[in-house]
Amino acid sequence: MKKLPKKRWLGGIEIIYEDKDILVVDKPPGLLTMGTGRLAVKTAYYILTDYVRKGYSKSRNRVYIVHRLDRGTSGILIFAKSEKAKLSLQAQWGSTEKKYLAVVHGQFNDKAGTITSYLAENKAYVVYSTKDAKEGKLSHTAYKVIKETKRFSLLEINLITGRKNQIRVHLADRGHPVVGDEKYGKKDNIYKRLALHAKSVSFNHPYSGRRLTFETKFPGYFGYLLK
Image 1: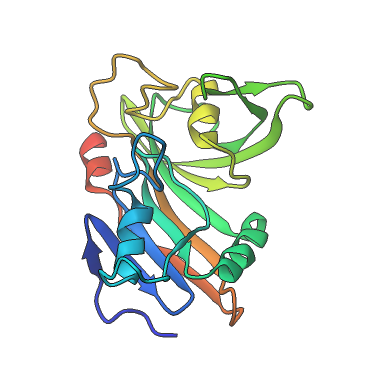
Image 2: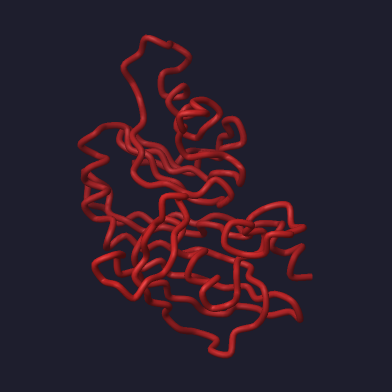
């Protein structure tokens, strides 16, 4: 397997790595991973499917979604090029190392720790923590403070489990919502994007078994917030 000689860009998506089995990309904030009933185009899935079809709409080539990132979250997103590769990657998802960066409001008393709760989702698609093990799924988010300013903290997060909106809910539970999070944080947010970024991922290749690690660059917007 060879890395691309140079990184390529497709509709704002940066292709970090590609071989015959997988695609690893850096998704920009504001782009959906896949479509909804109201939006079927302008998604990472749509753009990359068109890419592997090389513009030929009748091609059977397609990409398969291994996992998702929230629309406002930027960073590493993995796609498979076959259902077999997708199932292999999803089967090892619990042992896949996933690290994030987040800029949050305020300062933590404990500069490192693990946030644990049962997460459930209501009919309005809002995720929340509950003490009821029958109602929610046990979720763990490990964090470490990297830098602090008077207003914000930069965290490195190890996503131990991968529930929907997990990082955002857990940090809001601690009273330190992610900057720009209008859903779980401050409703009158003045910040232009969600300050959450999928920094790196490590997993075994679905066929060779080789351990692969990919990392993205530090988002410039985070640097702006932390000045």
